[in-house]
Every structure is written in structure tokens, then in C-alpha cells.
Amino acid sequence: MQQCRRCEQNLPLSSFGYGGRSRPRKFCHGCFSAIVNGQVFTMNATEAAKFMARLEAGQSLRMLTGGAGEPPICSADAFRRHCELNPEWGEKACALVKSNGKSRILEGVYNRTVASRTACNRGHPLSVEVAARMHTERKWDHKWCDTCVRSWNGVGRYLAEDTTITEPPKIEARLKLSKGSVHLTPDDVALIEKWLNLGASLRKLLSEYDTIRLRLYRKSNPAWEAKFKSVITRNSRLATAAGSRGYQTHCKYGHPLTDDNVKVDSRNGTRACITCRRAFTGAPVTEEDIRTVECGLLTGMSFKQLTTPAAGHRSTLSFLQVRTLRLTRPDVNRRWAMAARHPGTVRSFSSVHSIAPIRGLPVEIPSAFVRNDIPLYVPQDGDYEWLFSLTPRYLQKSAREDIVGDLWIELSERRVDRAGVPACAKRMIAAYNKENPMKSYGDIRAPLPLDAPAYLDGTMSRVEIVAESLWA
Image (cartoon, rainbow, N blue to C red; front, side, top):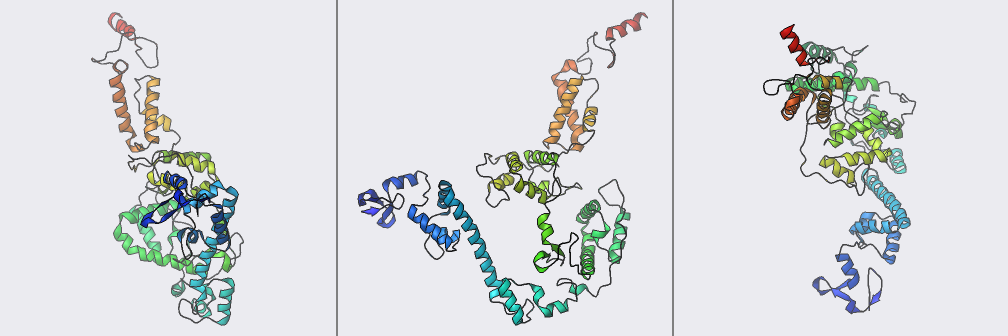
């Protein structure tokens, strides 16, 4: 007699087959056939109890399914399937998996950065008080080393080398550059160079729109970029060092800038309030903005294209706004998932590593996807009048409105941009005249009848004009 691992029944040996190396299988013929036909082997009652006991002991899911140390119990797919079949057991197990994974990560960080540390990053030996504080709070802070803090002269770890530079100039207002074009003029560039040489930072010099214009200029002028990149970096560090000398104790919203509430940027040494970062979820998003993003996804755009400024235009939404909407609005997340056409975006919605994954999404990855770099069409006031003015006046109003509708579809589906609309309108008008020769402008190939109106806004027929001109 032998017990089946899946159904846990004691069956004779004849009910079991043989696997590799002529070893008897652990499954009976019925259970083995079910697994071969596609069923996922979950766990039996004994193994489920053992799985839960090891989870409560602090082991991670990787240890239970991958065999790190003790032998594994089942696969990760079998664990998820067992959670679906047993919701109460699965809810408790998933909570333990999440907490155990986080605790093991924190334990690894503690062992690497705290347990074996005897000196700071610059080699200064740590005092007994600092070592005790490290073990109590289970972390290391570079500001705990008194020797390092004294050498920073009150401006921070990453700005101490700039303390000998003179103070940056005080700027009352941002520069007023030329308007009307996304490209900077030579006078604008000369004015920016003057203030950069004086030590001013770009953040205080330029507005957001002018910053984008300068970014385009830097990209198209490598020589200027190579000359002033070091100056721009030095000025930004200088401005940060000057602001750090005041060493604010609270942020502008009143939150204390303590060690646990401060995030230090390793690139320039700036400090940020963690409470403000967690509370800020981006500017409010209207339903029109949601529809605009949905239209962009329908035309094959990705979230990166929609959240990145390009060609002098602002992004449709910021990454933080998109992230907040997908996490807080499941209905919007599903609408965007159904509208996605970009292969990378479609895959990201069903990936477990996505911001808000959707299981069982009935969207297939398009096989014949062609990348389109035409910007997203955003309707503006006067677009209907502009499109209507591109159609000829000799056509009927219904025909002109049909052409306007076709042009709007071409724009919304990103087949043509605003600059290419006039040429597209000419092609549509030519195609319409070819399909409807009697409705086009009268000539020798398609003459108008004599009872047709002589004027667009009148009721007089063409025969009345002919009679009046001959016998008047």
C-alpha cells in the first residue's frame, strides 16, 4: 500500500506508475492524468498545514517554493491556486508572505549595513554611543559621525566642497525672454549666458516654459552644452549650498525636518520632506484629462509618451498623476487598460510588477503595431471653423461637414498632425469630386444643370441669368 500525495488515499502499488530512473511515482494514475491534462497540483491538507506553520515561523515564499535550505512544498503557481480555492486560508497566507518578505529584506539590510559596521563611510571609527544607537534603531545615518559633520561646515555632506565659493547673485524676478517661438533667439542666449557667468541657477532664472526651450537649444547645440554644462552644475550646487546654510528646521507646510522625515538627494544634497511627498498626489485631474489619455492610448501611445514633454509641448499628465489615478480609481485603470494598443503598455497592465495590475484582461497584444511619432491631437477652440474653412464653398453643407468629420478622425487617430491637415483636406476633396462628379464644381466634364442655383446664398437659377443676359 502507498499513500497518494495529491488525494491522500492509501492505494495498492498497482495504482502507481513509474517515473524517471524506474522510481515509483508519488501520484496515483487518476491524479497523474489530471496533472498531465493541465490541472495545477495545489496542496493536500497535510502540506497546507505544514506550509502555514513554516510561514508563521517567518520563512518567505521563495524558501517554501524554491527550496532554499529545507525542501520545497509546492510551486508558486500551486500556492496561488490553493489560495483561490481556499480564500480564508489564502488571505492569511498572503499577509504572512508579505510581512515575511519585508522582514527578511530589512534583516538583510541590517546585517549588511549595521551589524558589522565599525566605522563611517570615510573611515572614522564610531563611538560607543553611535554604535549603540545603530543597533537600537537598526539603521545607519551618515550624520551620526561627529567628525564628518564638523568637516561639512553646516552645509551638508554633498556641498561642503562649495562652501568657499562666493554667494550667488540675488534675482528679483525671472528673465523675460522673447515670445512667439519655441526656439531661443541669440539675444536670449546671450542674456542667459550673462547670468550663468554671474553664478545664477537656472531654476531661479527661467520659467518652466523657458526651461523647455533652453533644453531644446542645448540638445541642438552640443558645443554650447559642453561649454556651459559645468557652469550650470556649479551654480545649482552653489544655490543649494547657500540655501542650506540657513538649515531650516521645518518645511514650508510646518512639518519638522527631523532625521526620520528627511530625504536627502545624493546628486545635489537637497533635502525633501517625506510627509509632504507622501501627501502630495499630483494636481487634480479632470474627466477631460482622463479622456485625453484614453484617446492617446487608443492611438498606440504609451504612458511614457503621454507623461513626457516633447517638441515644446507640455505632457498630458505627469507620472505622479497617472500613478495616483491607477491606484485610487480602478474604473479609470480598467478603462485605460482596455484602450491600450502599445505592446509594452498592454503587457505592463497584466504584469505583477505593474503599479496596478489587472488579472484576466481580455486585450491581445497587437501583432502589426507600427510606431507613430505624431503628437496627440488636443482639441482647441476654433478647430471646427478652421477645418470647415479648408473645404470649398461650392460643395453642399452636408458634404463639407462629412469632410470635416473625416479630417477630425485623421487628427484624433494621429494619422496626420496639424501641419499636414491642409494637404489631407485637398486629397479628401479630390476623392469626393471623383466619386460625385455631378456634385462638384460645374465644368465641361461635369456641367451643372440650368435649374441649379446661380449663387450660393440666392434662389435665382442659372437659366434666369442666361435669359436676362440674352434678351434684356
